[in-house]
Image (cartoon, rainbow, N blue to C red; front, side, top):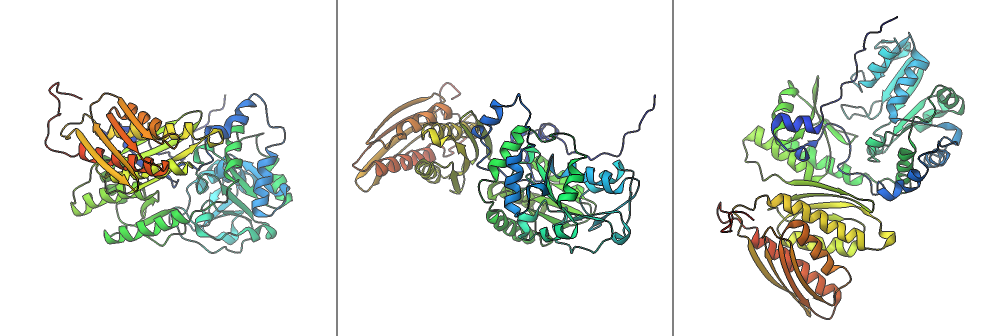
Length: 506
């Protein structure tokens, strides 16, 4: 029997659970700045998207996901016979090394680039060389990982593969090179926010596509992943917010004495000596960044997550005090998928987006007047009505608030507020009692306001009384949510270290 030695394998970072155990945190407090993925999944990644795929999960897709391939072809204005699907870009990187460089040579541009190219060469028993003009296979990582730069495309005699995993962030691509024989690789893992789905694709000439697909295993992409990818393509991709956040984060890092390289991606690379030292120092804050030989790579997430990173860096580099830790909470049901990040007290930085505009606005008012930092986003089955989405957004917020309150030690406990809005008047009284009680009277109710408060009281474990009257249902509801927020702000004020109960607990 022939035995084989294990190859030098791609090293995956440790799990959230392992990191949390190492630094004595809850796994929910760990934030990954080491994977170059967005802070949240796309709006299309909801349970309903998978319903049809689940109904047919006992079957194979006989057309090799033709609807998905056709949608990808339409995005790039190429033929259906020019698209090959795979399990992320990595499947193609390994496959192309075996097709074009087995026992041969591989070069990468830039030389300091994505490590998977080297592992693919090892699996193909190929040698890595520096001279791109002499290589059988040349990978151009454009924009480049881990440095974020946008390299030029060289003239080569071997097979050219341009890996455009981050092209959406650069705003440029090299699809015109397909006509010259290049193979373009794309992924749904980055800008589309579907890293866990593992879907990638290659764009090439019909002849090269036929070569690639003839050497793939049948259906390496699952039907569930294909459904998620197809749904993601239904909405034109917009990374402008991520790019703006990248530039903000770069400026803040510069103020801390760090000097990120100009980036065309969703991450920043900071040249430094001994980057692993800083990686280790940030772990106790739940912040996970990645060290490379020449520097530190930091994924750009969103403002709330990035501020956690900046707070940890300030604490380590300047000795600044670290703000209170926020709560991260996710709720997934058959009807909704919602994520909440909450810091109490905060600075009134609030973003709520579930697609249910009116109650998104109502919860924004509550959190802002409550002095909280809240980012709650996700999707629900709005096609069936507002009920599930509104109910679950308030449940999600309530569960996060309950976590943030902890044992409620040192809190004032009681709060009340009276808020007018034009002809409407709302009065709210709150007790952080630990007991879920709601007595709500809202007249007229726009539809779900009373039920929203009941859902909040149940999951936040608070006693809540709300009385509101007026003529305009919008005004009545808005005054109510503002009043509850202001009452909560008062109740959550710290006035010592005691639990405000003769029982000793709430």
